Amino acid sequence: MTIDTKMTIDQEYVRAFSLEKGEPGWLTELRVEALAKMDELSLPKPDKTRITKWNFTEFAQHKAQGSVFQTLADLPEAAKVAINLEDENQNLYVQHNQTTAYLSLSDDLKEQGVIFTDIFTAAKEHSDLVQKYFMTKGVKVDEHKLTAYHAALMNGGVFLYVPKNVEVKDPIQAVYILDDKEVATFNHVIIVADDNSSVTFVENYISTEQEVNGIVNIISEVFANNNAQVTYGAVDTLAEGSTVYVNRRGVTGRDARLDWALGMMNDGNTIFENITNLIGQGSNSDAKTVVVGRGKQTQNFTTSIVHFGKNTEGFILKHGVMKDSASSIFNGIGKIEKGASGANAVQESRVLMLSEKARGDANPILLIDEDDVMAGHAASVGRVDPLQLYYLMSRGITKSEAERLVIHGFLAPVVEKLPIEAVKRQLIDIIERKVR
Image (cartoon, rainbow, N blue to C red; front, side, top):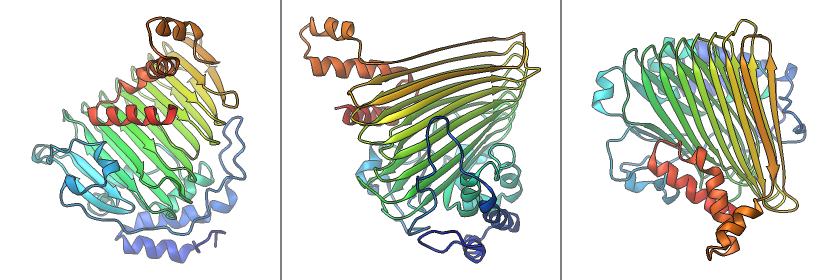
C-alpha cells in the first residue's frame, strides 16, 4: 500500500523505520497493521468544521536530525523561557525535532522506580509495560484515519511511569523543539500513574520558525489508576502553516483525579480533542483550556468528559480570544452513561472577539442517560465588556491597556493553573504577543 504523500510511505518504509529504532516486534506489526487500515478509515468529523481539504498526510520529511544539548545553557532561546535554567537536576526531557536532546531525572525518583524516557527507549527496555498502554486502553488505532496514521508513523514522544504509592513532588517536564520547516511530527506521550501515586507533568511544543509547511499529529494517553492523582499541563505554540491534530485522552480508575490545564496557542489550523473517561467510581476530572486565535486560522476544540463510574465529577472550563479573521468552534461535552448515578457534569465556555471579522462559536452539550445526576452548562460569545473598559479608563488607563488587562483577567483561570512558574510566564508572554 502506498499513500499519496510527497515521500513514499509504504509497508517497507514502516518496517525499515521500526527496525532502525530497534522496536519490539509487536510495535512493528502494530505500525504495519495501522498503515493497512488507512484506506478504509475516514477523517474525524469535528462538529461545524469541514477538514476534508486540510492537509494531514502530505509532507516532505518524516525525520529530521536535531542537536544534543550538554547543558541547559545550550538550548535555543525560545526553549529557555519555558524551563528553570538554574536547575540542572530538574526532571526534564528535551526533544529537538526527532532527536532526544536532553534528559534528566533525579536519583531519588530513579530509586523509587519512576521511568521517564523517550518513547523508543521505553519500547525497547520496558516493552511489556508500553504494550499494555500504547493505543489499547486510551486512544484506539482504528478510531479514524489520523489515529491510524499516527500509529504507523510515530516518530517521537515520551513515556512516564510512576509506580504504586510513589508521590512525585516536583513537576516533570517535556519540551519539544521544532525548527525544521518540512518535517512531519508524530509525537506520542504516555503517562501512567499507578495505584495511590501522584505526578504533575507539563509539556511545551515550541516552533522556532515563524512559518512552516508541515503537519503535526500529537496523541497523549494519560492513565490515573486507582486513587492516583495526575495534573497535566501543556502549552502548544506551533507555527503558522502547520496543520495540527491534537488528541489528549485520559482514563481514571477508582477515586482517581486527572486535571488538565492546556494553553492552545498554535498559529496554524488546528483540530483538538481532549476526552477524559471517568471509569472508576468516585473519580474526578477538571479540564481547563485557554485559546488565542489570530490571522486567518481555523480551529476546532472539543473537550469531553464521559462519566462511566458512580459518583464521578467532571468540570470543563474553556476561554478563548479571537482576533483578526480567526474562527474557532468550542464544543464542550458532558456525557453521563447509564449506570453512572450520582455523577456531576458542569461546563462553561466563554469566547471574546476582538475584531469584526473574528468568529467564535461555543457549543455546550449535555448527554444524559441516567436519572440520579446533576448537570449544568454556561456559554457566551461577545465583545469585551464596555462597562469593564469604562471602569478601568475612568482610573486613567488608556483604552488599549484597559482591553489588555480585561483579556488577561479573562484568561487567568486557566493560566494560573499551570504548575511550573516558567511555563506560566511563557504562556502569559505568548498571550501578550498574540493579542496586541
